[in-house]
Length: 261
Image 1 (cartoon, one colour):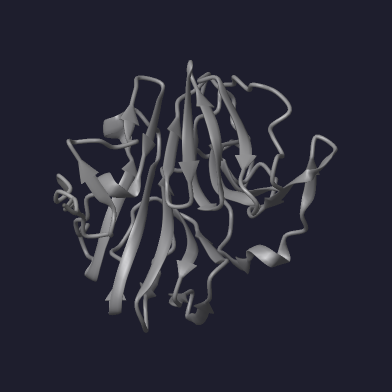
Image 2: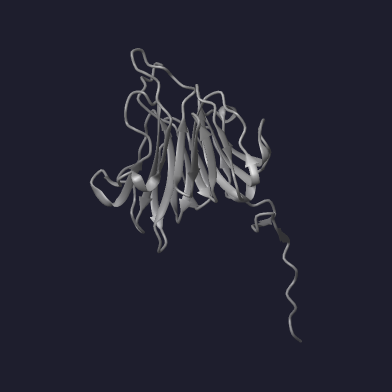
């Protein structure tokens, strides 16, 4: 008699992932968090129109910044922000009105807005962007930064610590007016960080492409495109790229300020 397979005890979620007996790769600890797409919850933030946010990290988690993915329907808009804001286009197209000028940003395009600037961010079609928001820490004798509109390809890739298999692109100017940095890091298959890092900077990290293994604290996690990682100050961290295609992520860190501040 032919065997009839039983119906699996799981069902696809909204994003097509399968949930089996509450299993998820999402993991939260005092010094780090891994958040995976199967556990994402969407909700609008104040001022959003035809858009929702997946808030990945915020002060409620212990972070000193907020990072979220904004998902737009056609005609969607981002709400206002009382702090400085960084946007990176993941999919679709974003229109930005700032300082009386209009900008169109495609995937890989990004924008930085200082605290005093009121901007309008909208989407002419279904789109996704990564958003980082942080209260500005002024530095005596240093002018606040200016608006910046650019694209990732305009930032020259630099080998990380002399390793050509790991390329870093600095998206914000490395000067004292900016109190945080945002980079992309591209790993060729098999490339790894040269050491386990532990430092005063916290991180927000969004996996953009590929997959690999991340050490966070005393745990090792498989990670892939779409995952988000928060790392608290001094959390031991290390990454190695796996698979046959490069791995790439967008990473935030506070920068250019004394720890006592």
